[in-house]
Image (cartoon, rainbow, N blue to C red; front, side, top):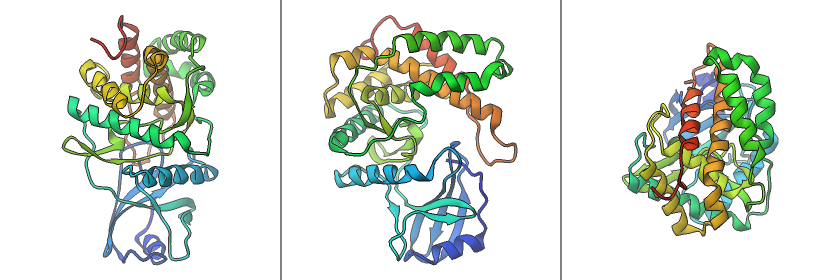
Length: 319
């Protein structure tokens, strides 16, 4: 989440007048994340999230995201619905951007997950994949393996402005990952971005899975690998907690079978996930507007993760 587009109180009040959720009390921009503009909105009828979709999220993709969320909700997964106005319209225009009013879910995202919390989160991902087994829609991964080299080339030697030698380091790792990418593994609808800040919790219980705007059809185990890279390290990527990573995998396996070839490929998929987030963070680092209310994320945190996976001599689910 982030704020790129400013919304006036007058415009927001007019927007809310089309819903049956009360009058505007307050609105506050949410700085976390890098994708869309988001506001925490309080009305006389409750609390909501207002999302304005920026350049990386295409209007044509929103029906896929909302259909996936509705499908998961029907399977009793804790996901936030996009709320219709009185006329049944879900997608609106506000301040020149597509915009939706989103259901607010309770809970907090954890910055230092425990083993028990990781187990619960992995279990929730497994339940999500199981529920999506019969989801009929498909969407290519807009940040999938085929996009990594073009993004690397667009960043170019500017990568060395982030850290000396980064261009060569990433190029070498990218070649290695692409040469052995396990495209034969089972595919399905995945979240593709289930970081700790996209999982809401109360204690050790998951109360919300949010931010589905990278959801797509891709290798199912890649989703778990993305999660592993995000949950198993501190924010800087300097310190790994492999016990937390194992708990993710164990929790996942309690909900859905993880095939032996999926399990064996997790390290390679995690390396790919590191490259994906390193490159997208690098691009944002180099191109985020100076006046945007957004917290840029350090690309080098994913270089450190990549090196940690490269140093592993055992699979991710054993010590």
